[in-house]
Image (cartoon, rainbow, N blue to C red; front, side, top):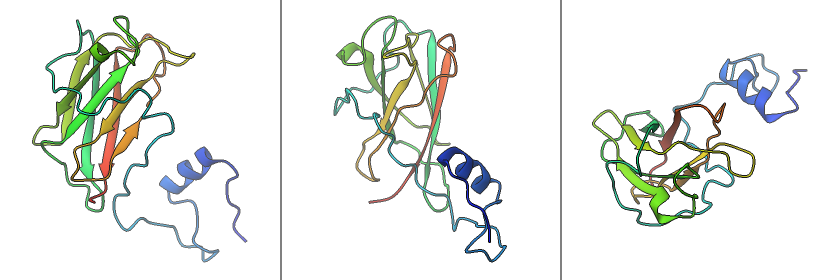
Length: 161
């Protein structure tokens, strides 16, 4: 009988490597396509619907980057609106000046410069949201590996409505 990992992290790591077997048959489990990104707990904190599309938030110096793809086939999605906000050297994540949005390019890539993210509640983290309406809304709350990092990546795989 196969053994299954007891914690989520080990389960995900082994699953990605094809090491978890299906129903004891000894066959690797494979996804039928690219799975959608689940909303992260705490991702919607201080969200502001309709935050404006901006070239930069504040004085910049920190880069939030990532990609947006479609669930199933993994195709890049151009023109998708991603809202970004965080607790920074220039303001708290609840402040309007700490929020902005950007659009993905032809390759589904987004980039937005913002002030340096600083720890809030003991963790340096950003908030991102896809909220345009063609796909299910997704909120992300990625953690930085160090408060000294000057960039943070987040990737969305969106499920059509």
